[in-house]
Amino acid sequence: MSVNYKELKKGGFMRQRQQNYFSMRLKCVGGHFTAEQLGTIQSVAEKRQN
Image 1: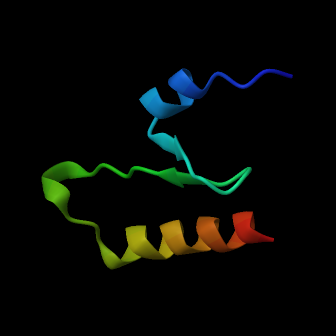
Image 2: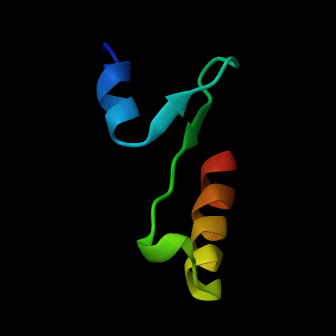
């Protein structure tokens, strides 16, 4: 399976130097996240690390 890294980058994912690691750009209105939104982001990040 071939990965289209240009398309991933358009969606906010950037490939890291470490193999199979990506960072994700988050956008929000006015540049502010609520505590609830940050909690959701944390939950998703913790699930993906396992």
